Amino acid sequence: MKGSRLHALALVLGSLAACRPAGGSSAPAVLVDDAGERIRLAAPPGRIVSLNPTTTELLFALGAGPRLVGRSNACDYPPRAAAVPSLGGGFPPAVEAVVGARPDLVVLYHSAGNAAAAARLRELGIPVLRLRTDRLADVARAARMLGKATGAAAAGDSIADRLEMALAAERAVRRDSPDRLPALLLAWDQPVIALGAGSFVSELVELAGGRNVFADVPAPSAPVSLEAIAERAPAVVLLVGSEIPGLEHRPEWRVLPAVRAGRLLRLTESSSNRPSPRAPEAIRALRARLAALTSDSTSGDPR
Image (cartoon, rainbow, N blue to C red):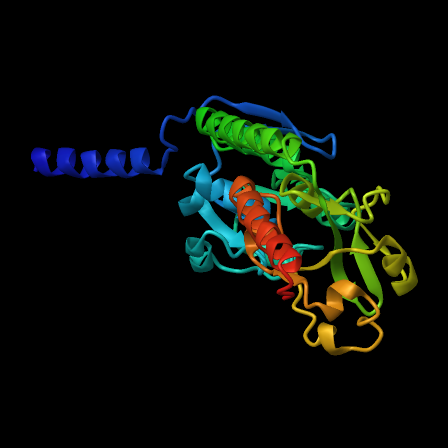
């Protein structure tokens, strides 16, 4: 009998150990998020809701994927994320659905649209961590913050360090590239929305050897006219996040030589549509595509 109780106790202790993050710490964590809110976590959270694709991807990279009990419908990477219950959109979140998941930490994108939901969750006693993930530099910072929040600070630092080193290497390649392909980063066509310098996609393009023709627009995106686009003479049109079918056949767009020549690239991969640890791979893939496009256009073989 005594042996049976000891065996049962060993199983319970083993299960508890398995739930702890590898190499993690149970010491209290005090964090200040991008909204300026102070969050105190007495122990690493065991039930996490992440409604931001970037932070969901980072949580899996940190080894905290098994602790996710809710995600947004846009959180589709890694593939294992599909097994996490979707709680709908994350801008703003459905508070009732989030509360129903019984989280002890909620991770939200920091925006004015999520402020009310964050305040309501805090009123209910649920810690909320709001992180802005707009630029490539935000990914390393978020990795470190989430590492501390989940008791995996060493893993967070490692992810951040590797990413920063890889991006530094890509910037070095950029310095050695004198010719930059002028590119229109088109997010939508009705109305026409172009991405500006405030978008991380603009960072990807610049590091891949392109030049955003609307890099003088500091905002992440802005409405523009076809006339303004024609004046800036993009050599390639990058369709970001949306297929926009049939664009190359529409008369109003065929005034652009790049469209008439079929120099359109579709950036629909998730690595090109959100800041993530995969950014260096996305930069290298885009660099190869732009180089191939340049080679085809100079050889008289338009795409």
